[in-house]
Image 1 (cartoon, rainbow, N blue to C red):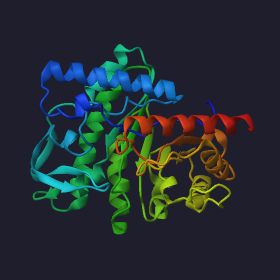
Image 2: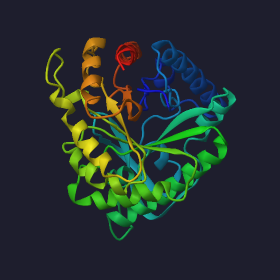
Image 3: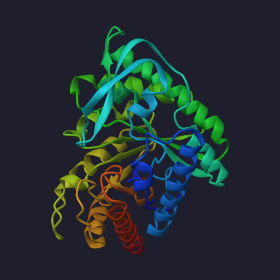
Image 4: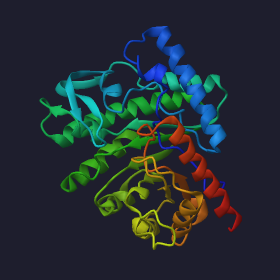
Length: 335
């Protein structure tokens, strides 16, 4: 494997022609516009130097919760509530046994097969977050509901794998809620494992952002069936050069966890903050990567933004990705 792969995390700002009418487009018209936006975003990613493109910024999805929930039965969608990043989603209430009515992300798989890709990453919303962001008016407890979502996500991932075929497929399970209830880390563990249970031939990722204590996650990592952990660090780190990079102290803790985990795991290192327009210069990103390399081997470290870049303009997002790639290249010269 190539050292220090640069990867995108998931979402990217949609072009205005798509975002302004997203809920108005229907059927083939939506497919045409979403495909156009995806191709434009892929071109932008390529020009930035990005090495792992995911699925082109999730142009087929409005946001991470309602997209899968709207394709399930047993859930009624109500009005908007605020999510973790000052965005809003339409919250659902589970009123009976949930099931999957239709695939969530098959359009993206089909497009990337059409484009001849053979190595992509599909972000999917994790079962714990789906549970935590829903009202539970049916299941006995939160654990039962999380496992029910886990079984649904297992069906989705199996179908994605079947549709993709023999190429390399990375599945990134997005769990922004994962450490928000410290007493429920066993539910996170069981529901995520349920999502990938019995599925072979994929590389599993977990994305957790803006945790107040990554130690909660690290405690369950040895039992999680996940290979790559894409985490946020830049948001908590100073932007001045020559700092001691306090925002990256958890890299050492991750390495300690990796050393006692029986399978080999890798770290996706967040090096650009997605909550402000400040363009981290390559020299700053280089310092952050070099600090992480004090603990992690280059072939077990990937470089990414803290989270999805949908919070920034497409222009700012592009510049952040480009600087990330330039910094990566400078580091590789010294390895």
